[in-house]
Image 1: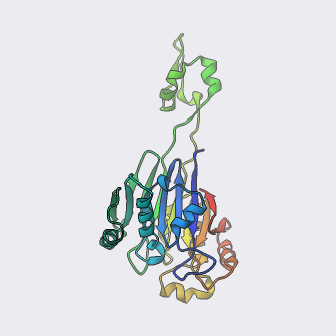
Image 2: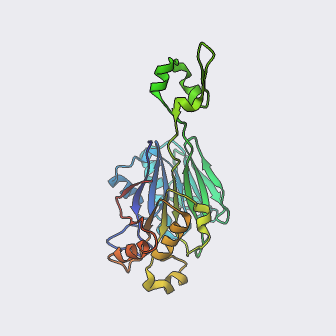
Image 3: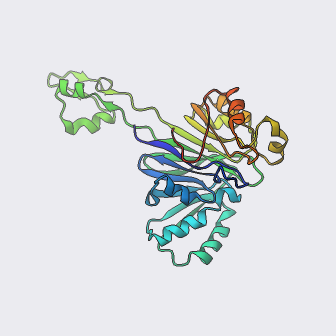
Length: 304
């Protein structure tokens, strides 16, 4: 199967700690890299994880809190210093556009590549990006400022050719693409060989949902039905439910409820409060609800 991976650059929350960087991930789909959130230090983490700057084609920002976007301007500046010429697309709440433009005009004059800003409506669930391999949908979330998550969904692949059947029926190789796209084959005696006999089913479509920052949304699972992997913020444990409510965040248990209700394949926990030096307590609370729960840490690479 083609790569569909998540590279964790940072999984901390707003307060800096020696243990975690601010929120940022790189989603790798086949030969493309997409960044989701760009907290402080994201470009250093990309270097450490040997992720090529030139392959990054788009950045998706969930909301305008510093721990999710303070690393973007330095990244844009570095791309300029390295002589980037390919456009960089940025998908972010509309309120961020003028702020970013002002910073670029002041700090990054003379960029030799274009910044293509795509304002997103954080209240709508819709496709905001599409290419031949993947679509990206917005997921409206509930936070203190306009915020949305993102759902990366692989496009269906073609079925796999049964080489034994191709050889058995003497089918020319030039007909392979037609068969992959649904055609059958007719023998010289007029016998029709159905398409289904010549192929095996395509790989299962994979999907990845990034849900941060948000308070618990009991109905969010409707948009995440049968998703392969969910990353859902788990800022607090049950010991700090009041803080979760106050600051519009979620507990690990609530993140697990979303994954369970969505019938997800697995749940990744992150965006940890600085109060936790050992996040095992969060993992234990999540696994009481949804067994396939896992803590993320900087440097991890997770297959979707």
